[in-house]
Image (cartoon, rainbow, N blue to C red; front, side, top):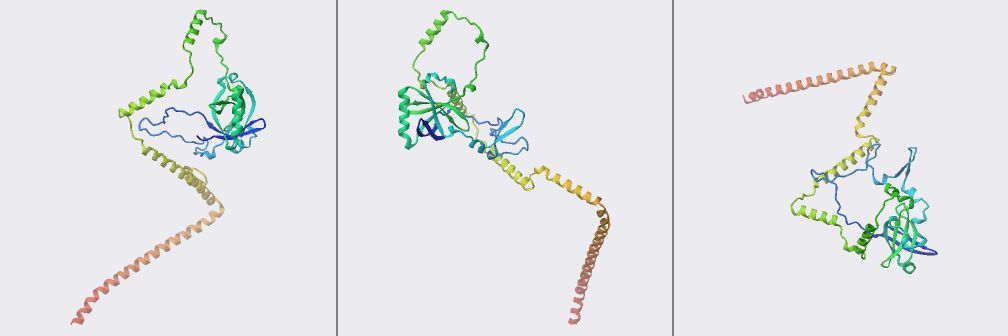
Length: 336
């Protein structure tokens, strides 16, 4: 087991260092949500409702909406600064009979293990609770929530039951409670006789989870009948590619100034408008003819240069052909 909390039990002037462990665990058959067509896993993304961006856990804070519609945002640092003595201390406030606590108040159960140096005071408080037949009422803060708690002994270990606050327990408001329903004495005697015949010692191991067993049999029958299919690995890898592409797209957007990729082309429109505005100014009107003349001269010069190059190339080719034609004549004269 792994401890989820570490602190001390404060009993008068005695402080007992302890670690807290979850005493229960679920054995439910767990299912994944999948696409009925191809078995692909259904995945959920943490997306901001304003900008549509996916949010990392490190960027998530807690928000409390006020009655007037405004929002108060609290970070982990805000919770850490709360002045809660019960964050690291289980202070014993009172001792009561266990029968005085209605089971509806119990919420979750934890085991308390003493630190190596606190074993002796731990055993002292344990034995005192057992001999007195009492339960200690305490307070403890777990995961940024303070709860009442009952501290008792079970099988030589101190057990802590977190409890709900009185205002968290609903009161039944049913119409029949205000009615005068008559029950005949014979019916009451028969019901009491039935209760007596069914009374026995409570042995939790004698009871089973029929639903879980039926579900396990159903899964086994499906497997034996060949109604199974391999895990769709392509679906998982595809989801990873989508996530990667999303991360790359956000990186590009951040490099361009934080705007989404779809908005990047829209940025060019203002630039064109700005160019048009410059042309509309007097200075631009004065300079425009000169620029057009210069551009025309440059184009003409380029054309002249190109034509000159073409003419030169033609002359060079003609000269080579003439030289090639004279070569046989010279050779024939020498031979003669």
